[in-house]
Image (cartoon, rainbow, N blue to C red; front, top):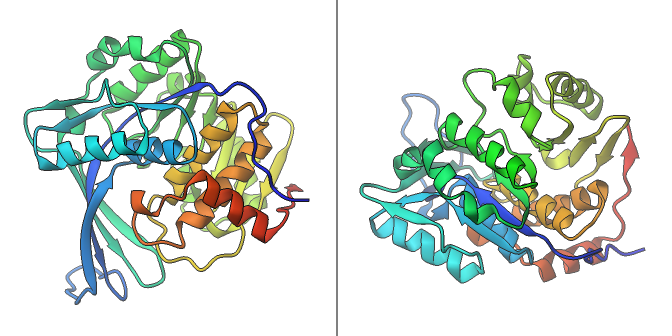
Length: 326
C-alpha cells in the first residue's frame, strides 16, 4: 500500500498569524560553547521566522494560505514579502512598519543540530489591536496557525479572533514561554504541537529526551491544563498524537539529517494542509511527518521546504509507514 496523500474534500483556507525573520545562518563542525570561538564553513541569509516558515511551507505543499504579520521597511522586509508572494502565499494583508525587520542568528552543526537567537524587530510591533484591525482577513478561514514569536497578548487576540470566525486553531508553542501560558490560551486552541522541550516547559517538568510512553504522560498533563488535542513532535522518532481516548505514534522515516532548522514548522504546515483537505488527524500527521523528514535532508529553512510532489514521491519510494497505539 502506497501513501497517496490526496485531498478528501473541499480545500479550506489557512491563515498564518505570526513572525517573519531574516535568517543569518552559520555552518560549523559543531555549535560553540560559552566563550569559545570556532571557524565556520560557510554562512548565508534567507527568509525565515516561524510564522513565515509555516506559511511558505503550506504554499509549497499545496495549501491555500495567507500571512498576517509585520516586517520592517528595510531590504530584509521587502525580500521576505517577495519570497512569500513567489511561493503562492497571499501577502495582501502583510504590512511593513518603520524600523528593522526581525532577524534570527542560526548556528548549524555538521550533525544537523542547531542553536538559534531571535531578535524580534518589527514582529514586536504587531499588537493585539493590529490583529483586531486585520480580523476581516480571517473571513472564510478554516484553520489558523499561531506561534509564540510575537507578543503573547497578540497571540491571545489572534486565537480569540480565529474562534470568533469559526476557524480551528493550531498553536505551535515555540519558542517555549518563560512563564506558563494563560488558561484562556489552551481553552481556545484545538491542537497544540510542542516538541519535547516545549512540552516539558509547558507542563512544568524537567527537560529531557522522551520515549513515546513518557511523551504520552507529558501530553496528558497538557490535556489536564485544557489542551484538547496534543501532538508531540519527537524528532527522529516521529510524532505522538494524543486525543481524548487514545495515543497514536506515527514513526518518522529514517533519513540522513543535514539541518533540522524549521523541521517543526514544516511539520505544522503539513499538518495544516492535511486537515484543510479533509483528511483525518492521523493521516494529516502522517503527511506532516514525511514532509518534515524530507526537509531535514537539506540545508536551510525555507529553501529546504519540499514541494507536495516531492513529498508524495518520497513517501511512495519508502512504502507504508505503520502507526502504533501507545
